Length: 181
Image (cartoon, rainbow, N blue to C red; front, side):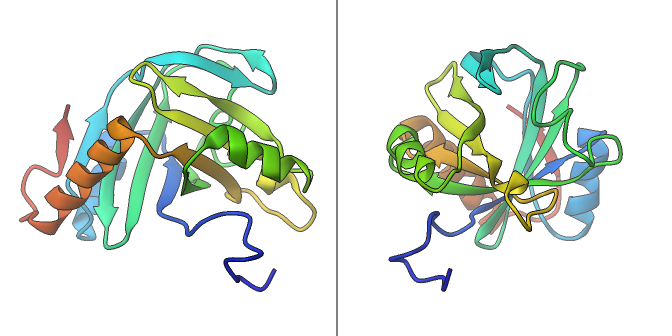
């Protein structure tokens, strides 16, 4: 790929998704580097979720902050249910698990990717209507752990949340680095 918009399979990366063993500790680490504030979403509720084609339920929390044009998402799964997070090579110590990109339609995007042999590994929607799909780009020839891509569908809930995170980062004074929602 040349990187041209005409051949790129994905839009620009807007999010770095890290699996971490301790959300608070990881948020404080990033805050010490000037990234913040982090907004904590505890025990995310899914309307539906599929992992490797089968319905699944697991317990996870995330903390999200903005770092210039890139968002940092910290992910912690509280249980051992098989998922992209527990089966990630760096799940015990933590590490970069995925790159997030926005899309107008997860379903349409997955249809286009299927022709390239790229398929969803985990996909679904949250209780407030946010559609997502993590695709198997980290399993393609020459790939490596951390190379999975998440498709995040534009919509009122996610666009509003991401705008709030960006706005908070623009005026953040370093205080209250982790904020519970």
